[in-house]
Length: 336
Ligand SMILES: [Zn+2]
Image (tube, rainbow, N blue to C red):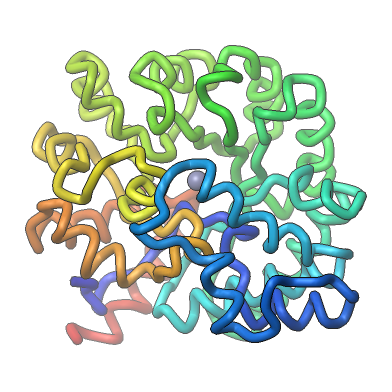
């Protein structure tokens, strides 16, 4: 269960994997884009995934209608704004929203730097209106290759003051972390934090490489670390946190069922982790689902789930003063 007296933080949510059905319908209507249905109920089966249609390709196909409606900067701004509104509705105090500006720009030929600016705008406006604290993680989409990712990094660094960290996502096995050493040298030089998608589609070597080649401070997913006891010890010893997204892992068939998810064994070995939604607009979940349904199904005890809520704040890319402010605000809410 979520403890209302503690800050609730979401650290791994893709902004473009979190678009409301109603927003897809409205943007499509405004811009003459044809969809397979004209109401939310009809569109849901094309966008949402459930356990009856798992697999990575089925998951990726769902992004089609989401990126289709990112027609201009205004659409990006709206989606970014609504992400923070949705976080407020979920009772989230602090959220890190991540996106690849290149991926969001690609479908309609937008300027990736303009996408960064529009999303940052939308998020700042929503922070003011909702009181939810939000930060942006820029994603380098490794599947575009090293050269394009350098250009994507330039678009992200053009808005360096709006970004707290840089991530590497996409085809983990085909585009190893070591290809992106220079990119992340520049990320560190810019004073930004680093989190890397690793140990989801590929094994422990991918996590080692994220740590050694890119100096990752956190790992997105990372559960395949369980295959290498030395890596498990290293993660636990160094306090490197995993951004765990159990339902998303299930939906891409990275794990066969909740009970088989390695996070329980990683937790027993002392590895720090938090709970997250990944792409809630596709998985059709909210953060409470991960705490109240997924985490118990994975085999985590109530005490361990509460620890994950505490660790989310510890792992957050925030200053000590910012974390203290969130703690004070939550404490005034008292126990539920
Ligand atoms: Zn992710």
